[in-house]
Image (cartoon, rainbow, N blue to C red; front, top):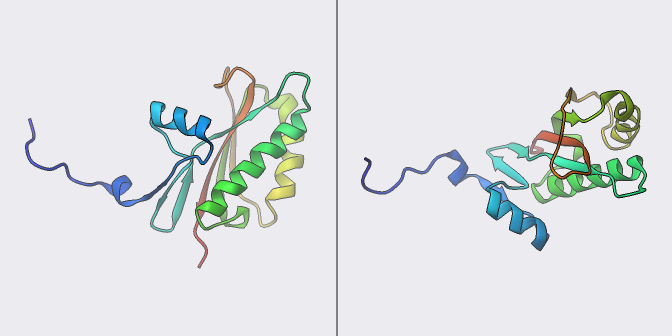
Length: 140
């Protein structure tokens, strides 16, 4: 058993960005995750879920997710231009990739980003079809 004060790790020294939305913040605090963690000049975003509302257009849902990622990057002092890596988790790669690519190309301009797309069986919440995780570097 350790005694004395806990040693502070990198996450304790980092800038942890929590959601500005009270509903989302409640889940973050309960589940123990943040919108992003800024460690040095690297910004690690938690996955943002593309959720399609009943009868909704998947493209609108992708746009909403990419805009949310852009807002989190802005709060961290960066933009989509500073994103260097993206991982996307899809419940149906075949049908989601065309719309994902179309929307991604509106937000992520050349040169290309390092991107891995993975098919999964399920996401949280139930209407989630894709989850997008991004790593960015602070400019300058």
